[in-house]
Image 1 (cartoon, helix red, strand yellow):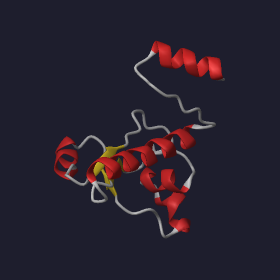
Image 2: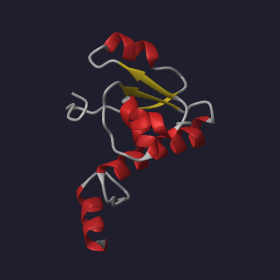
Image 3: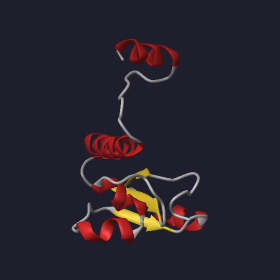
Image 4: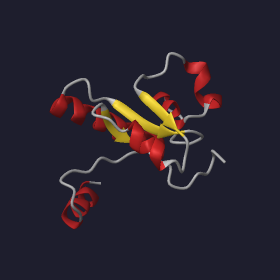
Length: 115
């Protein structure tokens, strides 16, 4: 693993590597990192995540919260706050939703489980 991490760092733009067991774990780490970076750089007000309806990002609490599918998240209230769900393919809605409070936008580029 150490050799693979060194090879990835030497071959890419990255300074560090974080190995994950699943896509859900990778998405969870990315969302937490976005919020931590925004908090450290801009303060606690910049914590909003923009996500899309009917997406799938995993089955952890945070990833079902951004997924925008109540069938996966409704049994786990209260969910993490600061997540705005928008319809896919509505660039005007995305443009209007991005604000000084936005720290991340998560997109499922090819909708699989969501339809």
